[in-house]
Image: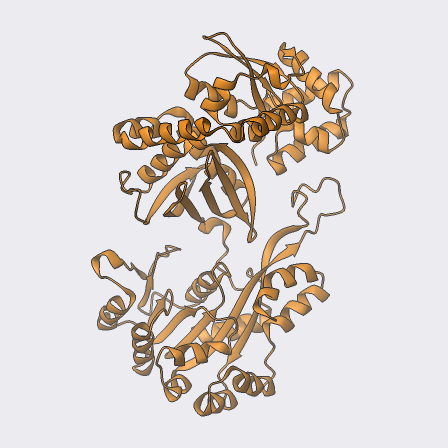
Length: 538
C-alpha cells in the first residue's frame, strides 16, 4: 500500500525530537502502510508514544492549538448537520462556531479526508486544533447518549436525505464533485491494495458502514456520515451505468476503474433496504488471481488428474461449493489447459468474470430473456467442442448440459452442494434420471478456500497479515472420479452415502481429509478449518 508522505515527514519530526529511534520509525511507517489505520492509532497501539504526548506533538508539528474539549464545548448544530456516528468514527469534534468558521478538534490532523468532507457539506471555512482520540470519543459518545432520544435529529437527517434524493440533477452534481469522487476512488484503491474480493456499502439510520471482504472474512473499513449516502450511491450508479432515479428495485451493473495504472473490473449489485440502497462491489481483478491449478493449491498428482479431465472429448465435469469458494477460478484454470486454438470453446456466464483470448464468452441477460437454457441451446448450434456453463441452476439447464455431453461435447459447470458426492442427489432433485448421470458425469470436484497461516507472524507487528494471523488462501478440495464402482452406485441409488462408500473403495479422499492434512503440514490451522467447514456439519 502506498505510504502518505506526510506520515513519513511527521516520523522524521519525531526522530528529531528523540521521541522515536530509527527502528521505531520503521515500525511506525510499515504498520501504517499495512494496517491503513490513522497514524495516532498506530503509534498508540504499538506503544511508541503516549496518547497525551502525541496530541501535543501533533500540535507542535503543525503549529496548532492543543485542547481537551468537554461536552459543553461541542457545537450541536454542526454535529446534527454532519452526523454524530461519522464524527466518532473519524475522531473529529466540532468545538466552536462563530457563524462563519467552525473549529474542529481532531485526533489525526495528518489525514484531511474527514475534514474535507465536513468542509464540503458545511460549505464554511474550518480551523483545526489537536486532541486525544480517546477524549474526543468520550465527549462525542456522551453527547450522543444525551441526545439519543431527540426526534428532531432523526427528522432533520431523514428530511435532508429525502430532499437530496428527489433532486436528481443536484445528485448528479454532487456525485461528480471532488469529495465524492475522492471517497469512491480511495475506497476502491484501498480495497485493491488489501486484495479484497468484495466491498460492502451498508447504510443505517445516520451513517454508512463500509466493509471489505479480505481472505473470505468481512471487516469494517470505515464509517461515514449518512448524508454522504445519496452522493455515494449516485456516483456508483453513474460509474456502473445504472438508473440513478430507480431506488425501489434491485439493479445490477458493472464498472471499470484504473487503480495504480491497472484496469480493474467490478461487478455491482444494488439492493433497496430500510435505510437506503445497499451496495456490494465484487472486484474482478484477474491480475491477482493466478489461473493455474498449482497456484490454487492443487498437488501435482491432482493437477495431472484435472488436466486429464480438461482433455476429455465429452462428458460433464462439475465443481461444487458455496459462493466465494473459487469454483469459477478452478474452471477457468481448466479452460487454460485446453488448446483453444484447435477447439471451439464457449462460456455462458452471469456475469463473465474473466475475459480470455481465443474463446467465445457470452453473458446471460434475463431482462431480454437471454437465460442460461436459451443461450445454451443456441451455443449447441455453434459447433462447440467445450462449453463452460457458469452454474447449473434449474432442470432445463441441467437437461441441456446432459444432452450436450451425450452428443460429444465436454461441459464444465458449477453446482451449489456441500460435497462432491451430494451433486448427484441435487441433479436428481432437478429431475435428471440416474442412468443419465451415470453415463455423462465424469468427475465432481468439491472445493473450499482456507486462509493460509501467516508465515511472517512472530514479528511485532506483522507487516504481511496486519495482525490477523493469516495471509492469502489455499484450496481444500476433493476430486470424485466416476469410476465403475461409483457409476454403479449412481445407477442404483445415487444417495450421497452410497456414492461416498463406493468412491472410498477407489482411494477417494474427502475435502475434510485434505483440510486435515493442510493443518498437519502447518499451511493453515484447525480454527480456520472449523470456521469454514463447521457450518456444514462436517
